[in-house]
Image (tube, helix red, strand yellow):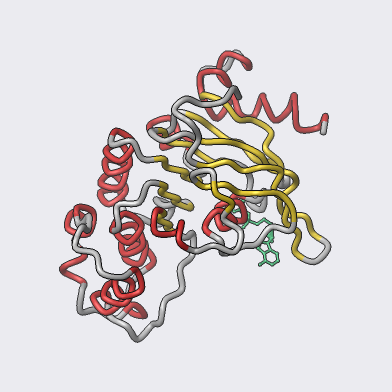
Length: 246
Ligand code: ADP
Ligand code: MG
């Protein structure tokens, strides 16, 4: 893609990551400017979570560079103040209550009275504040994770399969929040398998196959290139034509 305007908030340059002998990311590169929602799609094991964790600093790539606001993130943690992350699977101490977890995270982040509690309230976290994390259902945990990702008003919001285990109402509230944050000029990266959700939310699609980006452009470009109007069919067509060439 051509250089985005406004200038990129995030630049990923030829990032590679291996686990033992397995190469999970193979020279992944892209840039992203603020004010957009980028969907990351791809089969299970194609490297979506590894890529997102690399941006957060939870996975350290052996090669390549990740720049946030023109600064290499390697060895740095300060940039994380500008970042919200909702992991695909989050493990927190089971014995903490929801409100204890929130207090802990706020302590770690430092003094901050400028919190975004909109999602916290709309997702009904107040009603479960005294529950222990170990007793929460998968969907309830995801509600806590979603609220945490937005709490500190980050510039970059990374959501790894955010609606996978949410109930339909919570998923809808989260999608409304995603739209609102995009309108407020934030950059959102969202991995998802849900075609309708991607069509609803994303301006741009990054499709991964076996650790490589095999499509990165607007959704309508994919539809035009394949002659398929349905995103699912367009993706299948694209993969058939391009995946085997690599
Ligand atoms: P996705 O999110 O697209 O389903 P992941 O990024 O989670 O895929 O995983 C990509 C590949 O890397 C998978 O084959 C997975 O087994 C492997 N992988 C991910 N994390 C680790 C790890 N910590 N140790 C070993 N292999 C890993
Ligand atoms: Mg994943």
